[in-house]
Length: 266
Image: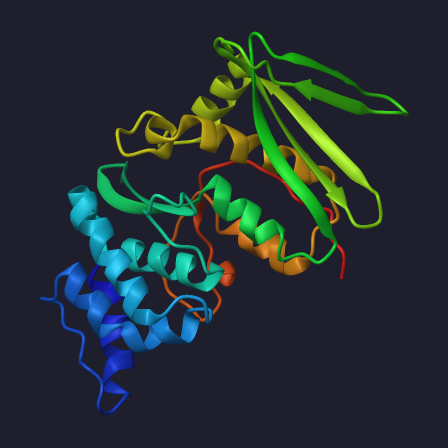
């Protein structure tokens, strides 16, 4: 933690007129002091003032974040800023999650379902991308092979319990793909790959359906042509990072999910 503050302090010392960062600062004070760097990383749709308020709100909403190492919290915050996603709000775009990592409380950055959809639509080739939960009383069928198809007719009556999830995408050129996962398979996948699955602060606890939709969408996207920027954005998901950079995708982090996205287009 001292290394982080020393690094930030050096940056502050080299910039005249800006607030110096000291080792005695709280996370909230560091956020305010780092506003110039946050401003550079933010897209036009989010003002630094609004982002700072959201960050401080996250600390108030989830007090456990105050126990996280300052660098992991700031790195997660910077991830959200550079992706243009609002963390820890009812929008469900992204989450800052306190996680006990081998005895050290650190902050994980996670993209939410709505954040993933927003990032996907930034690709001009993406026409439709969606995920749905299928319930016991819905009519649902799908076929694979040379002529894959998927049909889902939700019942207007009592839908029953969730039994599976599917994610799909369609490109402007007509190409498409989909993935189907049963609820049992979803739970097993989440428990295996999400270290924060059992955490009381995990979005899997507060927004299970949203996280399941995000997961099945990511699986479907394995069959999609992914632009480099989008692939880089996905590389930030479910990670703990301990450095900040003008391009957070270049910082190696501890990955929480085992997902591969090798297909891309220039």
